[in-house]
Image 1 (cartoon, one colour):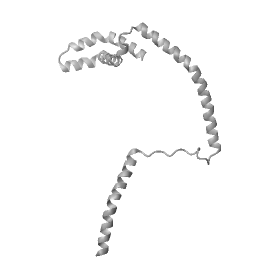
Image 2: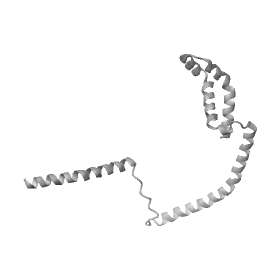
Image 3: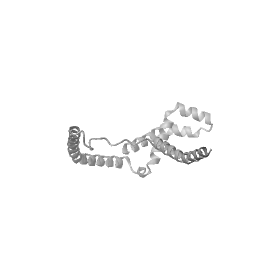
Image 4: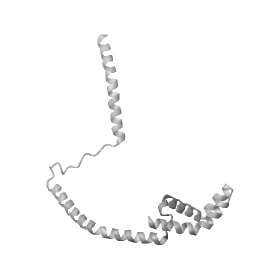
Length: 149
């Protein structure tokens, strides 16, 4: 995120003169043609949108952002050490579970859970059931009438 903010700031600074020329154009067709000829306009708009989405860091300087990024990277490096240890243990446990399931194919644990039906199919099944319930009493009445005749 910090890299994005810094890149957006530099993009805005670099393409601001071209964007100001674009803003001064009044006619729509001329404006569109200018925008197609100058990719800096789109780059400026994209960078400005990104900075607008992150207003918290608007006032901080580039140096502050880089320092914050360095501290965050060092924290990430510190947290990765215990994570790798846990991941190694987890890998061993997964391997054991795999081999246990493979060795005992008849147990319930080895079976895969049933897959869910897509929502469209479930809704269609419910609609079909309701339709069948509605038509069942009507069919019974028709049978009674036929039997009476």
